[in-house]
Length: 352
Image (cartoon, rainbow, N blue to C red; front, top):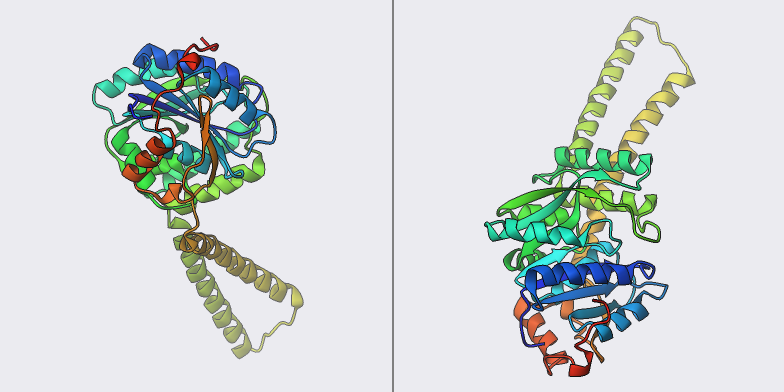
């Protein structure tokens, strides 16, 4: 593993056994069109419960350019992507999902844009096939809310599908936060970032790995990572509540001076309920930020790799691989596959 590839393709996989071979075939074909044999396809098994790892192992044995990584447990899409990026060595790195909603063939259009000076070429969806009206509406609402709240400009209707230069990837990996929102982090890095509009396909096989609960958590991670506006909203809610409370106190005092006091539990209950709700909302907002600070302060490993496979070779990486510098990660990868190239018998691919 001593030769540095020109292109790395990173694909996180979670229960993708039905479409993984087709994804590999198309990704390998696209990579060979732009990089010849100077590429690697990194497939990250994010704690799958089906036969995803077995298929990745077969692909690694059949295709010399495939590198399989198995995480110790399910870490989630963003950390699985980070693990793949940490293992990548290419001067150009394509981050893409393995469900074939983002066509690997768009790499042929992304590469010329990068050759003209772009640091990042990201896919921007103009149409989304196979999505429910609720998914489309909630995604639209999320991106528009995020664009107003975020402290940096995050393009609308984009995912993590993007081609990046090595320097951008290295900066991204140097950012230590655990609750990651990769598309926002890449936008924060800056440089010349160019959109490539495209129509997103329906899933090739299987079902979405982002149910409503994960979508809500993902949105919270995105907002709290790139905006302190909710904290300011909580502050203003407190100021407004205090103003209303003072106004009610003055009104009550004036009515008492006029001898027109009226007793009644309805008004009291309404006032108590409103102010209690506002207080709980503010505490909840503060709690979201505080909880993330607690998680960051623990300094646990960002991800844990169980094994890494290339050809017929299988090895383990150091437990602190996620915390290593770029040069130390490269040295660790070279050390586990010191032979450099897979055996000659494995060089013929059955993928095509």
